[in-house]
Image (tube, rainbow over all chains, first blue to last red; front, side):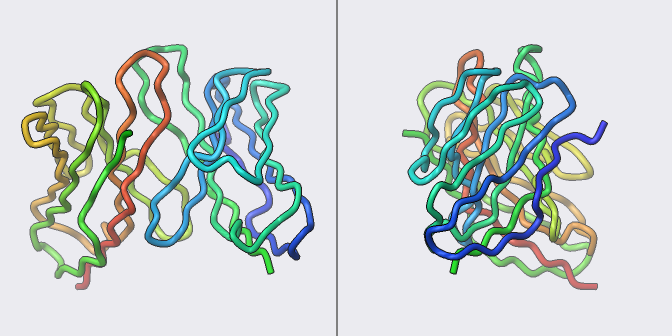
Amino acid sequence: NAGVTQTPKFQVLKTGQSMTLQCAQDMNHEYMSWYRQDPGMGLRLIHYSVGAGITDQGEVPNGYNVSRSTTEDFPLRLLSAAPSQTSVYFCASINSGTGNSYEQYFGPGTRLTVT
Amino acid sequence: GNSVTQMEGPVTLSEEAFLTINCTYTATGYPSLFWYVQYPGEGLQLLLKATKADDKGSNKGFEATYRKETTSFHLEKGSVQVSDSAVYFCALSPPGAGSYQLTFGKGTKLSVIP
């Protein structure tokens, strides 16, 4: 198993540009989520999904869109990038079906800089 | 709402020193509590967890006990190694089935010097 994969690893955007951060997992996990990590702020939840076709907002959803058309993929879209979105983005998944599995598996992250 | 407060770093220790990283939380009911570790350039990995009061989580020589009376989940290790240098995050998830949203503390950077 590859676990949770994210692409790209690094990205530089200009203000106003759009892009999609990719996230995929091969563990058949129902629950997936996106976090952003900023210095001195810990990780904050952007959006999450409890299964294909179902998404919901987290703590800091503004400026981001998500969709979940398959169990495996959970892309994060920035429609019009702003410097405030400069951050490291992590995708995570968990097997919510077991009821006793509490470990969330994190991807390696995407470091995004918006100039 | 839910929140997690952990001691600010950075923390610098000599090899074989004793480590404590304090973590307290605010939540309704009995959340699940976690410590995650992030090594340089990597994503987060679960270090240990506790799902009910008085539970002790342990892994790789690290321990933390879920203290409901003090709403704390302090991380301890008796003898740190250089390889323990990383950022440590305390986190909670709310009680109830299907509640997997994690609330994180701000992280504590640990540097262990030989």
